Length: 347
Ligand code: NAP
Ligand code: GDD
Image (cartoon, rainbow, N blue to C red; front, top):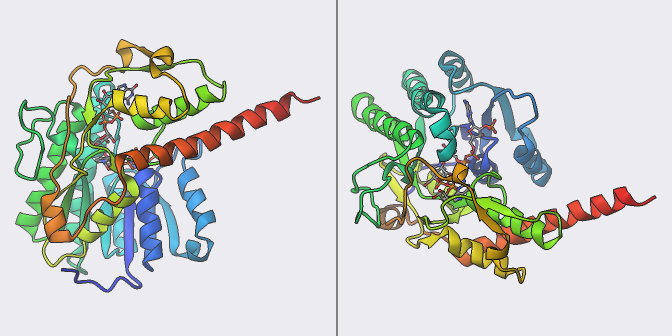
């Protein structure tokens, strides 16, 4: 049951510049929210998704505000949260790449676990002044791999297989603890993989759709991957941010698995993507050990029954449709890149 009046609410997002930040900000602006986003400083601008959103939603752009901050800077984060006084906080910020977490385990822990703790502490202090609700971006990577434990639900034990997964389990537990110890309205969304044309380019789905489109247009010769036997439950990010919002509109805080209930291998994704351009993926794809992980989560497949029953949430976009949306987008990008090159070559 929904229990909110969304007009003129204020939300604060960490991770606003990422894939989910784009879709969630779009949803919140459409629902009349004032949206504040934490953006970290980088030497190159990292706001292309948000800039695109501002162009798409010009009429709402005055309700979108960005602030510099970093999840590793807990004091700065608390100061910002107390200043903005949000009704809802969505902690989406993370070092979100599983393979990279093996190269940067301490950093991943600081951002994904200690960073989440800083958000919770800020909410605990803010709650002395006003009610606040917090969404924590938990993940199916927390389940990791116990043979025979698929499909995974809220009752499946965690067995993370990466520094990323371990840090996210710690953040999950802190979130539950703040709910129980401090009576905070905090929810864990245990989201399975979700993708879109705004997906980061080093995640496997986007890497494949970009490569297939560029190979089709003669801009690239080969695609180098790791383990193509792994299976994932892939949904559409636009559908999944709706579930995040729904969790914070309930009467009671709780934790929910969000998934499609279907699983597909990386190889199936490759086949569909390359076939749609009349190409055989085997002719263009190489495997390189550098893209394999020291420990791999072989299969993820989620059981989102609780979300369906309690939130009324279900995915709207099929796997085939998701792949098609991503391919169409990346084919357009490749064609523009090719035209750009041809124009530049003209005398
Ligand atoms: P993403 O595209 O990689 O975005 C991550 C965001 O976190 C970016 O805005 C990034 O900023 C920000 N960030 C990274 N380090 C930070 C730091 N030290 N301080 C503050 N912000 C920082 O990830 P996503 O796919 O949108 O995922 C959103 C969240 O959901 C993440 O927590 C992820 O772990 C979790 N999740 C994702 C999935 C999925 O399949 N997409 C599934 C389950 C859970 P920059 O733009 O500056 O890099
Ligand atoms: N990234 C990547 N690059 N993955 C590859 C490659 C490659 O070249 N080749 C094969 N893979 C395999 C990985 O080994 C993994 O089994 C699968 O493709 C998916 O990898 P990613 O797209 O990197 O996603 P992920 O499942 O590791 O993590 C994503 O989903 C999690 C939810 O389960 C991220 O978004 C995490 O932040 C998120 O929590």
